[in-house]
Length: 292
Image (cartoon, rainbow, N blue to C red):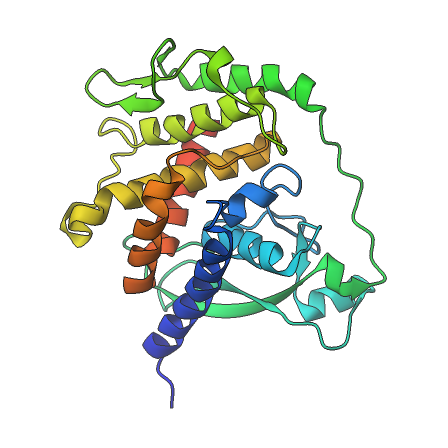
């Protein structure tokens, strides 16, 4: 008989394996699953409840969409699609996501939190591209040129000190400031403009900024040792991807991805819960930066 612990570990393994598969599929060009979906699809959304998925489920569904070539960001369980009057096509493969069931004496919740007694359970969902009889609601996505002033205001609202004119992009912990090259040094690509590249980079560094001791105090301690820096980079990657999705900004690969991809894969393969931790911390960072 399978124990609750074994069942939880199987869920973590199944989700992590699929994310690793998507990362490896794009590793040749250092294109991660969150780059391909963040602007065009946005955060994965439950078609029945209209709620956005959170934490690792965001990355898991982006990975599934990337591997399967889905163009929709809407997902739901088989029964939810039926309740919506839709039918999952015969032979379609479901995607595994995670929900957390509270043990006795705790409150229900979707995300694992320190100090809470929760057990991971698997749920299976299908993409809107896999069903018949349902149309996505019209999404009002602002024109990117019009959205950028809002992103500028978003960054300013955080109160972060941003300094330009540097030959690199980074978060200076000692001076507690974000350092960026001048805007005209950013180069566009086939999937994003130079301006979008600038904001994607700024949001990456802003996620690092959120982890300072007097903010979210994000520290990894002895658990990761020499890999702690790579894990923090993964948190910043996911945090930037979540924010880019929310702000409709194309999130293109960073030049330094080559230095981290092998580390990310190594950490994910050795510890099945790393992606869950990184995604949770990235969600917390995005929520913190977005304000109340």
